[in-house]
Image (cartoon, rainbow, N blue to C red):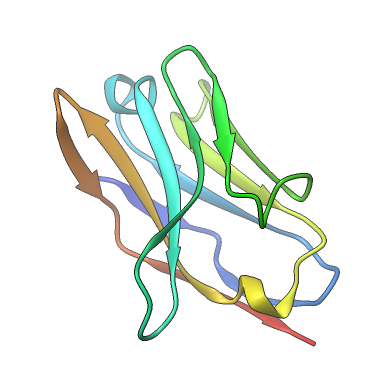
Length: 113
């Protein structure tokens, strides 16, 4: 299982970025999630979407981030708006299939104040 994350970069506080995680249709149609991690901390769940498109968000991003599935592109996207400096982290996408977890490479998001 290969997950390809993209879309990270530099944004100003209040700005927006969209991350994409590309994989096969079979993988993308299942449980997918975005996590983030800063140095010295544990990886934390940002948002998830399951096979029924039910979404869950961390309290810190509710109302600002949106996770969605793009069937045409076979991606799960994380639209991030109203970015804050504390959103700065390496973001990872994760897929869960048959009880196994698969991770993409991280993509760095830096939000300047």
